[in-house]
Length: 188
Image (tube, rainbow, N blue to C red; front, side, top):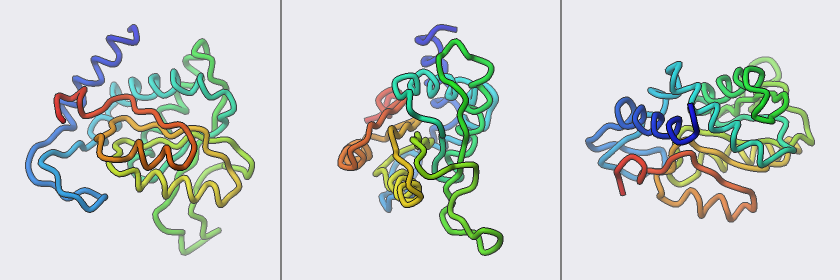
């Protein structure tokens, strides 16, 4: 499947499975007349594969990235699918990656960590998420991994709602990419 048809298929899946209309409160505090439930695509075998391949294509531009992670729960299936695809598509040029999950709250047991996974201080990482509105969830994940001594090279989202995330994230001086925007879904 070439890049154009892969992207077109992802747009189709997002429109068919993830896009809902009504009145929805967003994590940013805003209310929207549509909602994109990215997990309905990221947790499907076809959607997970398409998204992972798109992310791997983007990661080629960031050769220093050795780990991929993001805010749990939205990023979890994206991370796992991307890790699984690395070994299956070595021609993409991305080497081995490790994954990590950023919790909303520290565990109350064990190491009581905000981060699960083999993330080591000094790592250069990519932060991923399913949908971005204001960028708040991504900024939270960035802050957590930077406190661990890691460097964020890029944040990648599946769908950008074009509601300020790009501007917020650029202020943090790292790259931001979205696979799709709401315009790709026929929305403004």
